[in-house]
Image (cartoon, rainbow, N blue to C red; front, side, top):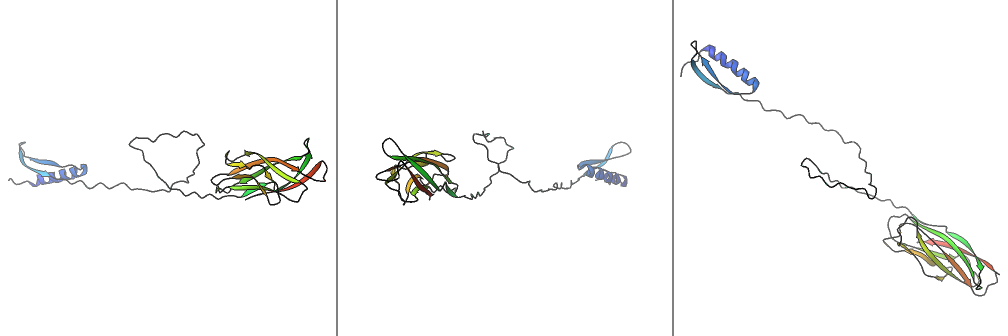
Length: 222
């Protein structure tokens, strides 16, 4: 193999630097004074590895969860290849309220009707069940003090104010005593919200109160 002159070695070094800048590999050829190739050799240049771009992280902004109004249309999941999905498990704690009845007492004035019976209306009596447990409840009415004659209570229709219709039902007609008589109830798994009921009280039998009588009542829910 012919000897490479020093001038060609300098040319090869310059070629190596140029190729290293461009990250290429090529074959250098030494050319003589007559324009013919005196010698040739290959210059190999290794490209330095590319460094990965730096990564940065930033905290997410606060996230608010707002329930959609009933009937809001929801778009079908996209089938595009560049979509991503996120699954998150949330724990929801429901702090229940209380259960109450209003009013807790009332005085019903009865008047004699054409049949000789004393009769009068009561209500509405409202039960509010805000416990969130749907454990059911029972509303009772009781005589706060004794009266002459036999008292009968006839509950009317239940009105669902904020509760679901049908979850609270009225009781049948029954004797009104100091021990308490059921006038409305809700079975377990129902009765949440507000329900109201009204009704009629009749008194029959011997009494000395004339054509009117006042009947004191108390109401309780449990």
